[in-house]
Amino acid sequence: MADTPGSAAHDPGTAATVVRALGDVVVSVEAAIARVQSGDAPNGLVGRVLDAAEAPDLGDVVARHNALIRAVAIVEQRGSLPDGEWAAVAGQGADLAVTVDRLRSRAGGLLDAASVPGADREDDDTSDDDPAAGTAALVTAATDGLLGETLQVLVLTEGCLAAWHRVRIARAAVADRPAAVADARALLADHLTHDGELLRRGRRVLARAAAATPLETVRRLSSARTVRTLGQLRRDLDDFRSACGADAAGWLDGEDPAVEADLAAVGNPLRVVGDVFGRGLARVTDARRRGDDGTEPDAAEPDAAEPDTAGQDAGGDEHRASKA
Image 1 (cartoon, one colour):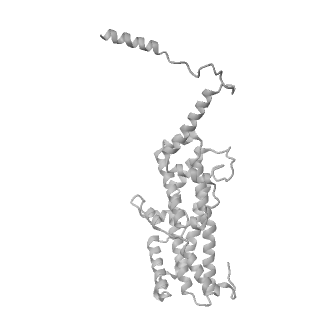
Image 2 (cartoon, helix red, strand yellow; image 1 turned 90 degrees about the horizontal axis):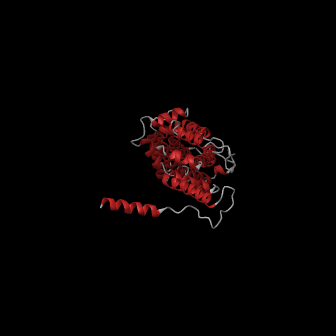
Image 3 (tube, helix red, strand yellow; image 1 turned 45 degrees about the vertical axis):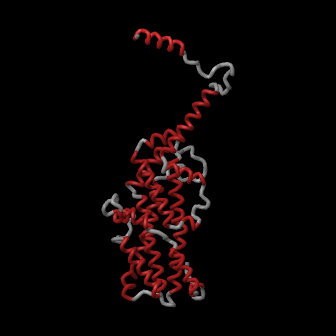
């Protein structure tokens, strides 16, 4: 998205609007930081995620994020950033942009691997689904592939890149400002398009795993590892949704309501089991009420033989008498 010399990029009001929009790219990083720095996170987690994505080594991405947010705060207070402090961060833009792009690509590839036929379709044709394969592929993507962690590192890196663009616009000379604003607009467009689709896709794939056939659902719930992994992935997707301000941006406005209903079951395994056995009980009850040929049984014929309690009572009396 290039701006010509006579375009709105020369308008200070337009630049200010873009800067404000950059502040909304990532509205919260707390959950991402907690995810990559928690006591349960393995050592070198961020490095493993970046290596898997074939992205540049950013070192301590949390420290980098904090430094860039500090630079933004200085700009907001003083109107610009001193030369020395800008020199410390000026060269980071290229690596951050490449990293964001490759992390998005990595997350999309993991969702591709977890998308068995039907798992990522928006239509109702699921006749070729393989629930077991879909669930296993998603668990592998989330554990070996670090899907949730990839989304969290994406949040941190994209937050860094948005902050860098905010500082760059403030530092740009008048002649360079149109290019700085155009580059920031491109980031905003990619964020809305690609991150929005990542969230919607991740939710569809996870919801499809949660909505597997009843018998497969019950079998799957016997695995504590699977339940734990899918529950964590649900939380990671929710954190990504919150961090990106997805609700305010309307990313999920057109989502099928069934997706949210299926995702609710991911965090409530007992509800899933109850639903499954409830449906099974309804089928058994219906089978008892109807004959094998689909006709109603004779109304005069009882549904089941009455238990023979007389013999039981007699036996009980005889037993009590013998003891006496």
